[in-house]
Image (cartoon, helix red, strand yellow):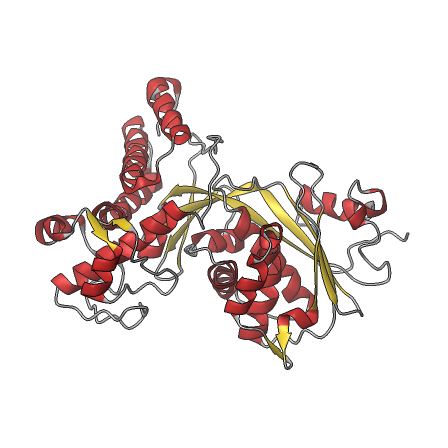
Length: 428
């Protein structure tokens, strides 16, 4: 088999990209037999790469318009794509770890079209939800569908995709966004589609929201597209406005430690907290005499808050509204009183009781914490400033916990960091 070599672009000095190319050249000896002969030796392969991300500050406040600080990881996902002359699309995982390897997935181009037009995103979500083993493929094939709907991609022939990733799955470091972005980069390169970085991130968010059905914000995809090594990406999520980067001082390191707890953006706890935050916003809008249209966050008549909880200051919230936000609200009662929320991604379940006060308070205070963290980090020179950075991180964790998103693993990590403390160089 002839050796594939780079004919356009370069690896950017990234060892994982070169390893991926080497893997392509060894596919016929790959432990997974489905990978044998995946690529035609005469065709070009377009490769895309995207990193995972560490959420340093901001987290779940992204969908409420907060400033967030994100750090791309060394670990990344790499995707290779080759067009074929048949009518099938095959996705193969090239993970060397047999236990982590995802199942091979294949469908026909005709499965994604109806009468020469792309199927609806609702239909696509239902298609991939039929078999739990195929859900992972929706992150990959959803990029094709979104580009068909949004950019006029004409998909009339098949494709072969090889996916390789060392971003840990289910660990809260955005393996899904890395997969979406790396795939979309490969698709755009293959089909000559030009996207600005911000647009690519927003389209990848649509993949996750509308095809996969996970109610994520946009910070994960923006980090995967725009993140820079050793730089904190400052992103104002209204909806995705870059505020530059902040270099980490030489004496500060940021580490991601596995808590042993699996994380799912599509999980019921995460979704309930998001719904609770938007319920709180809807109640606040009513208290303030503002007009809020259910399902439409863009045209909220909200000159002060601009449709985002994070734009409300902590002092104004505590003085004017906190006492009127109920701790818990029954879904059916909320629907009767307010009709719905302004979130186009989630819906209020009439049979669920939602935590509302804490998910409402969290992004209001978190935005303030992140802005303070950002200013301190830009000027951090002494130990007292670094200790303040750590305290802000502790506060963020405590607030996250009050929303109902705590876990024994992360709580124990925080406890251990407190025990060791600044005397041993651990601050938050």
